[in-house]
Structure formats: C-alpha cells, structure tokens
Image (cartoon, rainbow, N blue to C red; front, side, top):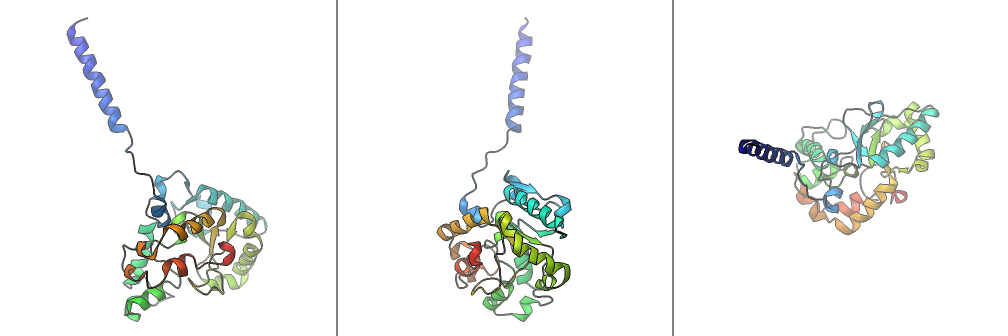
Length: 249
C-alpha cells in the first residue's frame, strides 16, 4: 500500500484518541464527610440523589436521597389512602442555597416572622442571628443539607392546628415513624429552632449524620457567610444542629 495511506491512517488514529481524551469525564476529588455534612456540594452530581416527581413537588428540580424519597413515597401512599395529601415545599438545600436564604434575611431583603426586617429591627448582630435562627438555619447547620429532610404541606404551625392540616399532622404523629420519619423540631426542647410541625427527617440516614456531626464538626467550621463570626458564641453544633427531639437522635 502507498505510504500516504499509512500516514492518513496514523493521523486518523491520533485524532480519534485525542477526541476520546476530550470526552472523558474529569476526575473530581471525593466528597469529604465534613463537606457533605456542611452542605458544600451539589446534590445533582451524586448518584444517591433523585429528583422528586412533580406530583409531590412544590417546584421543579427538588431532590432527596433515593432511600429517603422511596420511604416518603410509601408513607405518602399510606397517607393518601387515609384521605391526606402530601406536597413537599422544600427538600435538599446545599450550603449555597442556604447562604442565599440566610443573607437575604440578614440584610433585610427577606422578612422574618411574617414581616420583620431583621437588619433594621435588630441592629445588634448577635441578637439578629438569634432571631433569624428561630426558624432558619445558618448555612452549614441545616439538616436540609443531607437530602434526608423535607418540609411538607405548610410553613406555619397554625396551618397544622385546624382542619385538614391538623388531621394530617395527627396522622403523621401516629404513622410517620413506621416509615422511618421523625419530627426533629418538636415542642419543649431547651435549645435550637422553634417547633416546626412541617419538618420531617428520614431517621435511618439522618441519625448516622447526626452522630458524625458530634465527631467531625465544630462551631469554627461554620463560616463563609454574613454573621458567621458569631457561630461559636451561639453554640451552633450543640444547641442547634444537635438541639433536636430526643427520639430523633
């Protein structure tokens, strides 16, 4: 065969090899336990997470860990058979998502507790942090970081005190544990966020993460956002991350 043929064949093989190299995915460093617990990752980049189907989602592209979501589907099916509806209003929120919520409340762009401008009402920043944290977590401390927790049907305790909301909440108190779910922010705790009747956690996974927090995360690691300099003065790990209902630990 002519030499030109072999040159063309050689060049074709080289180009093919280069093309394949460009198509190969980049090797990303493994996600550390600390970064996972603090929410410093993208759920969409991890195969353990799945998208919540629109039937149960308040908005598009909400995600949960697959195991937690499958347990939720079983619970929702049982609840629906008993006459109750289920709508997930918030699911996985990573650090950046939580930072967006937190800083908008910190600077008064989002109201807290109905219509309060935290920036104007609480010029003392330590007090401002405490007031925001009555219902909103500092970035790095939210259970929503883990893909195990969800807010369901409403975001005001009053909704769950009458009518359909009250009936749903009673059904959850009676049955959620059968599917692995627990209400972490119940009434009567000495520390942490106020009661949230809408917030439910998938305990088989979340309990493991709660235990890891005790060994791996310190207040000083909660940083990178407005007001984070107060995390150690607020005992974020002991009083907020771990300040949950005893039966959720």
